[in-house]
Image (cartoon, rainbow, N blue to C red; front, side, top):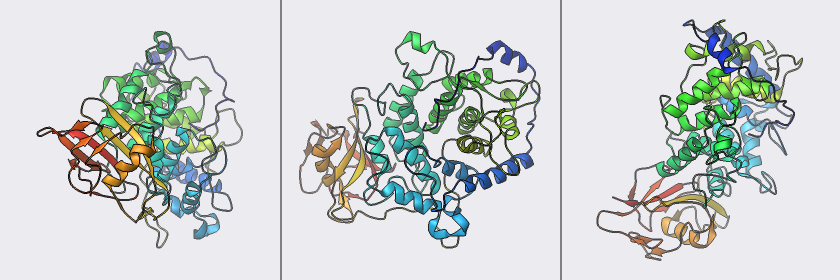
Length: 470
């Protein structure tokens, strides 16, 4: 996602039988030592710091280096500690937050992956993605791309990438307290679509293949397989699950015995390797032992470190290259550091800096968004972003639902609410009434479901889930 791909050339694949032969007898140790990995991380962090612009930025118009934040976090460096020449007023986190808060970000014609990329990297930087500013809620922006006609997809289903990174962002970017902020019903819908798009060889690509036998029988690629298996595992699917095991075996079949590299659709390169390793990391599968230690004693981590310039710290994109690549270095460092596709922000060392920054309340008169799901208990999940303009620093559930009847994207999330005013329990929503023990309940930011009251206080950035049931 958001990396240059058009310059890659499709290379001949190494036959799976060759990989299987090389893996027939596996030593029980890793070849890159903890000391070597620590050195790689230290030097890699130093290189990524060198990518920072004089104004403190990593991101700007077009393709940029903000994925460095996920690599920094995985390597144990707080983004707020990254400042040009030690000028803390230009630290990378503050500059990025200011960028995300501007009305012109990400572009005049944004796509869902813009907001997913922003969510994953804001989280790694220690910016609550739902509370970037009084007007910017990245979680709500992602919700707005829900495909009502194809539930579980985010953005056009043909660009399956948007759905995979929706799962990575919505499940991976937890609350400041470490809780999953989205309801299980939404997670289940995402997982179902990811499973349905797994190719017969165990891999995935960026294209939708669900329901197309011919497409399902085409080859997967290393990059998307790493991302998709990470999305499953971040969503709570265990690494013993059959689909995750198939993905692991797909990657195993792409190993080049002599180097430990994965032979991807784009040829042997560190970026693809980084995505594959990050998928294994996210699933708790050690990329240095067992299935990923070749018969010649090489691993994917060995391959990455072998293509790092030390002590300068940058990584080549391909072994034949003679200069480091910023994007390859980001992908490689994140993988070597043991990261998936985002990581919780480390505690800063800069005096006075906090682990998290977040908008503390609504700003009266400033338009904003909230993320809302409505689950009628019969499998009809509605997901939307609610646009409204608060009149105080907090609002109520009743006010949010009223705004959703006319200001939801996609439309139709809320069509009716009973009662429509005042206080007390919500007795019917979208024409479905409470019945005995089955009533409308609400959860905020992953809290336990409790009776849905119109007067329930809703704060800036809250992720709201309504559910009918016992």
